[in-house]
Length: 378
Ligand SMILES: *Cc1c(COP(=O)(O)O)cnc(C)c1O
Image 1 (cartoon, rainbow, N blue to C red):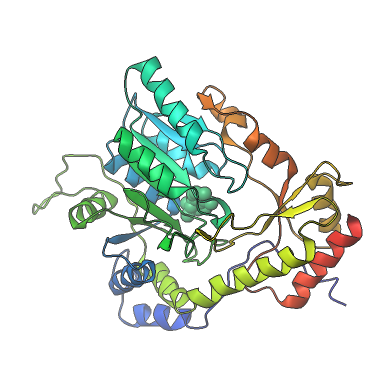
Image 2: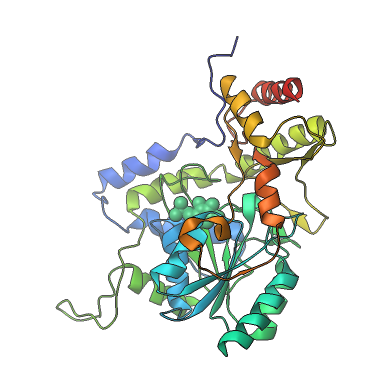
């Protein structure tokens, strides 16, 4: 009976109070970038993360990565190590700064950067170029934390700053500490399909108040404090609008339920599909990990009758949207010349993985329908 209704991968989910925040801004003529909703949204994010570190709301997660790299002093001729298995937005800002990305392969359990390969890449780059990489960009892909403690130790050992791309990992934890707090800088995304949305937005988690003030300055065109427009450095127009931040405040009212629901959906897939017919559902590797399961992903092993893409096409015929895993950056034509450290872990994940519908607005009967279709096909 529900054949007509598309089951989508990850749709935004309303708390019901977003309009209240927008209307207040409208009533008080706060139609501007910045304003009271932005301050309130930043406060709510900080409370949610359980940190004293300042959080700066920006126009996109990509803008947050870019400003994070600017703050770390990344510039022309520098090399920046970046997880290969990720969305291109993790790597593009490295190029905005005229720096060179160096890609590192993943380990198969978390899909995130292999700490051993990170060490290999740092050592090799230092030998080859005589300089240390300027920064490391680590990602918590699909909400699963990377091996953050080891990565942090390696970064500290070599004294290379760490930027944690937690665009997909809002609410995830590693060893009880929230994702986004493990790097010198951390970022979140509030794009339409992420854990919460501001209809487009992001945040940069800063190390301290001075850094946050500098980020706000750079994000508003780097205007020096003078009666006329006066600029000593290049600025950006990267702040979040007060209207968008209002949506974010409304969304924050139900963030815990949203995360709870994504985890519940993962649990339904896990118990119905894991270990069946060559399907493996990605799960927390140990009690140290607590993924938000932004997207539940499965891997199909060689005994499976179908490839992920064949399964994707068959499910689409049943109006079920799935998506192949991120194609690693070292396999992208645009990054063909970037150095790469690793073997074929990311490539293999890309060949065998599929993301299942995981949005927190999905009902149990819709998840059942996905499970039944997959079982039928496989
Ligand atoms: C979505 C995403 C980003 C970019 O965030 P935007 O808000 O869309 O700019 C960066 N990194 C990863 C891993 C993402 O999934």
